[in-house]
Image (cartoon, rainbow, N blue to C red; front, side):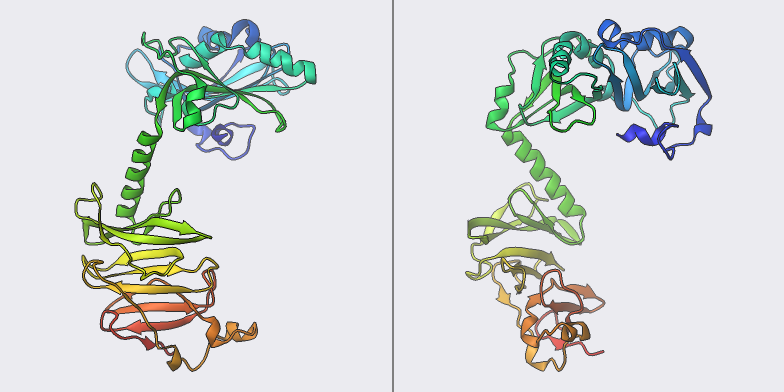
Length: 409
């Protein structure tokens, strides 16, 4: 949990305790989660402190309790605005083994901002609406004297119906809530986003947790795919190299000096670990794409190594074998309408790297071409004995890839 870095009992502080205005200890009276929920905790704190009307969770609200509901541990950072509109923070810890009182550090709210997704009230509602007491009792029947935990982080996303329960009601007090949603909707894909609290047995990975969700919104697979594609495109625009979409194998790049121009390799067929690609272009920052070359690798199958363009029309694409032991690079000077294979003068190589000799490699073992790099007015390609090998043979070109020479040291 993130909060562990900010409490005195768990190592290095993520922000200095000196920044806090003061430290208080408060008697913990309402210390049974079954009887008082966490409302009791907030009420106990409110007896000695002026609390905001709306309270938010900075990271997590973590609470431990026994089978009879006795609270044994609390770790959280809460915050909100006072009646003057000023942000105030409350770092709260409680460990029954170390102190019978609640520890509270107050600060000015530095580094905090209002986030409605982190509202605390939905946690109150979840505890009131859920059957967590019955679930704990069921666990107690299996094995007694366990420690149980709740973790609440505000709104979260979930894409599995395992252990998930959707609760009715208005979690955030806005008078609105969704009805008619069932966990079975996840069987066709997509995800729910809503206020969620997870119940589990501490230090027990054999028994799955239960997740209680309120006011969920269902996000369809189509919407998720569109959001994912948009994120990938934005990542590609900000990258100086290429980005691979791990979901479908599409490889993206945008021209360094003109982010409106984008290129991508799209998987059109796959068999036995190898893929065939089409080459597409965008002229509107990735909003729309058009196939401009249906066979950029000239019938070669494998896994795309990368794309890099040094201008709107001049660039390279690479493909590697499924084993990762060899690769081929192709260049274009017409924006991908045509490609030609890059052929390096391996016959001009007089010696292989010392490291290769020491493990018995020969020149024929150097078959993996790295994607070209531009330095000054030259392009460089390094040839190694495999995808993850180093200490390769370097080649350079001074005429935009028309010819290549061995780099001698």
